[in-house]
Amino acid sequence: MAHHAADPNQDHDFEVIDLSPFFTTPGAGDGDDLVVAKEKEEAIRRIREACSDSGMFLIVNHGVPAEALDETLAVAREFFAGPDEEKLKWSPRPPEPGAAATMPMGYVNQAAMEFARNNSEVFRMGPTGSGSTVYPTDPTRFREVMERTFEYFVKTVAPLIETLINDALGLPPDLLRQYNSERQWDVMLAYHYFKATETKKVGSHPHKDPNLFTVLLQDDVGGLEFLRGDGEWIPVSPVPHSLIVNVGDVVQVR
Image (cartoon, rainbow, N blue to C red; front, side, top):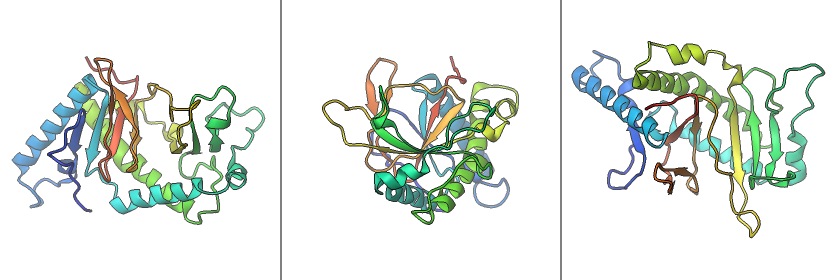
């Protein structure tokens, strides 16, 4: 897996955290154990600061191959470039009678909804193997690529981030992982934001996430911003093959 580093000469208003020490095996000859231990401590300290300040931090060397991220962006871009009538074929299916309320999976043009707050379209995906998502057949590799990335997020990234935030908070070992053990609520969303118009200038309305945390893959277009403690909106500059962690309301660090 390639090593990716944020430009040290680029100014960031958020933490850029290298997770490679957490993929280093102690005593395996791929790094001095004492140095690696100190790097882990520093990463956890910086995560705690980020959770206390902006509630957002960026991670590199997170365990997801760059090729998988590139393919994910590519198939999403290809799907959203298709005709509206084709995309609408993959709109959410009506729920079964008596079924519990869940987030509808599939394609939704949010900009076309009455009282729309987001100038975007989205394809929502449920957990791999759950049968909750009907995937488009064009692009032909859409399902394969998206499910692979979903698995990376659920099995590699999320458990590590849960552990790191858990340790940053000083909680009992594995408390957050046990709290968040029911994985059927995991969801992956692919967004496409339309060009701004006079009446629709905001791709996604200002919001907080009600969950534990959200992992974001940003393309090279940019546009993501976070609200700093002083009330100023700060742009999040794209860093190739990085992921952004947005801490939800469940986590509060003081």
